[in-house]
Amino acid sequence: MKIFIDIDGVLWNTEKAIVELYNKKYGYNADWRDVKDWNFSPAIPAGTPDNVINDLFESDEVYSGNNTYEGAVEYIKKLNEEFEEVYFCTVGKNINNSKKLEMLKRLIPEVKVITISFPYKVLSDKSMINMQGAIFIDDHSSNLNSSNAKYKILFEPNDIKNWNKKWEGIRLKTWKDVYNFIKTVKSIEYIINEKFIKLLSLKEKKCEIDLISEEIKKDIVKYIKSSINCK
Image 1 (tube, rainbow, N blue to C red):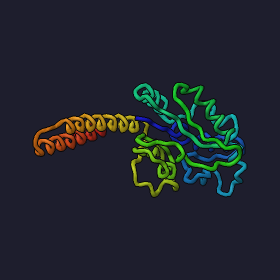
Image 2: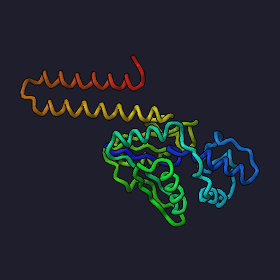
Image 3: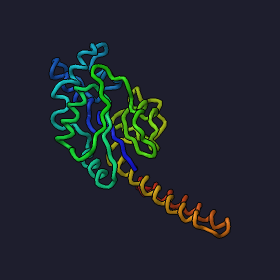
Image 4: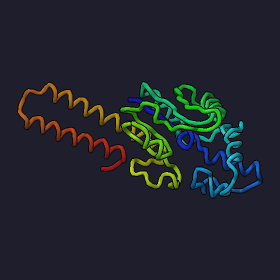
């Protein structure tokens, strides 16, 4: 099973990095937790010129230090050890993506990276990447909606953002939850595949096929309950 992981807002707390850099550069005192929109308002005042935000994204400081979300590096490394194909997947301008790659090389170099880059203006989402049968983790519902991934996780560690209000799929707030969800999915798919193989080789009565079907349901419920510590 392949796993695709967004960088900004999933591995890296870009809201915190940008707002704190804005505060430092312009003598402001905003709290990054107040961000509700993609232009970082109201933490950064609405109406701030695009070139100001662009300059922050292109600075050497935005991906310096360690603004990763709690547990992100730890759990991503575990996933990379336990699954054959784990990728970071990001879209951005050439200069912004180059800064991300430097950060990844410094903090988590063992994970493969897919970048979709443009010289001046971002012109695409991530739908050009074939994620059939895969798990996709992103902080933007439009990227999830346009993807053909089998399992789509909206990573939302802070309050609901305006751009994600209509998302009706899975929302997870911590990397521990993400890791447990992925492990549960892996267990469920293994059970289903094993039972399906048994079904294919079965040459008995239909009632036994129904019995296997019920066993699958019980196993799925068991693994879901265990993943959320439910008795």
